Length: 200
Image (cartoon, rainbow, N blue to C red; front, side, top):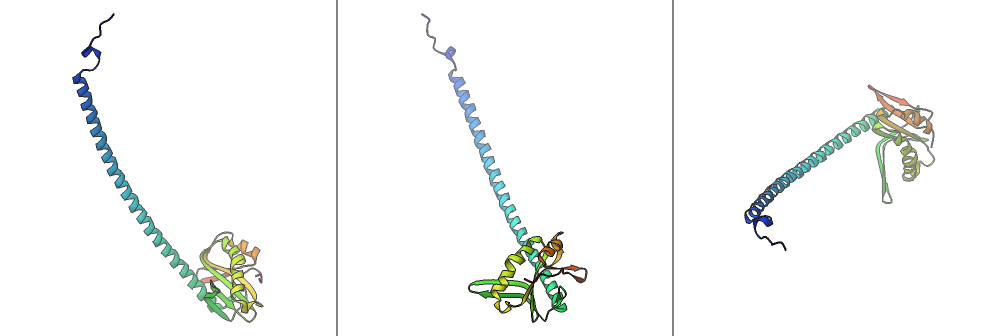
């Protein structure tokens, strides 16, 4: 039977265990320091994200304000031009109502410009840039709103129009399909791309 040996030949001695524990302790300190550094960097990253979010919100607010100003300038331009000419789609009108608003039964509506004569009404919506989606909105929504909110014009011919400082490429072509008049700025002149207007 073999004799059991106790001591250094069995494995690690006290000095080796102590050295391993010291190395492990040092590694744990280094991990803790690295964790502190990671936390600090994470906090710095969070702070930078918060600052970036703040800057994006501020920029968004400024851009929104610029868009509002551009939209207001476009409305003012076309309201003034059409109120002076009192003509839309080759039809003469007697009265112009810019920013016509009405509330009825808890609901409200607004039209950028409404032109009226003794037999016809023209609703003209103004945008800085006119997109084709506005044409469908005019036919589906604005026309119905006007008829609902202004029953005094129920027997009048109703014409629809859009005006803008710039137009999406297909606006004039799509407007022809709907019979909607298109007005745009061309230098100092207001051009009326009135196709045969459809009375709604």
